[in-house]
Length: 274
Image 1 (cartoon, rainbow, N blue to C red):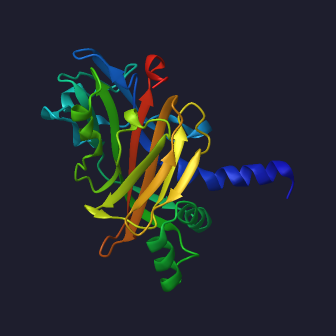
Image 2 (cartoon, rainbow, N blue to C red; image 1 turned 45 degrees about the horizontal axis):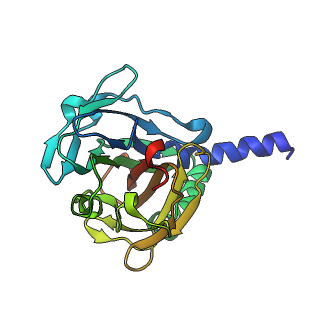
């Protein structure tokens, strides 16, 4: 196999794993109280990164969670234009923009699906296909996405930053155990991964600098408590992402139910020294 063919093969194998990653990308992560906030919905990494651009009817839930309460934000979603989401956040403190999509189907050739399951650490998928002798069959999954973005509105205080660490009850969720905006000199960020509200062990979580997103900066596999720790530089926009899949029965179109989840946060230029 010559170098050109080898590179093409590597690209094809990488496509399914990267093409599903999905996140909310605010224009800024720190805004003043009452200042408009815009965001786009992004999917993929590196050369495969693009605006999500799907029908907004595929977004049954997008909300703003904060100490002030829960605000339905579906009216803030835009179809077309330069932004996918435009709103104004009221009340100081951490605001969590959380969204989910409806399910879609994916059907990948056996080699690509097996490589994708291995790269993402999908233990239940690998074990099931081995047990049933399905490794030579296409991989059929029904997948959906969950995404959270942490936005700091107004001044940072201990009392209003606690909301960053609160689980929201999403099917698959990355929960920071410290507010990413007050990490201190160590820059260590412990996180917990919850699946159906329970700690998820052996999940592969990746930290990616969204300015250099061809590959993750750090990868951690969660421990028995569903936890892992990252070291986050004090500059840039950051993505944490994870996925999990389990076998399903009685579905004529899919053998696995897969959930993708992400958490984004970032440091505006004026805040990067902190």
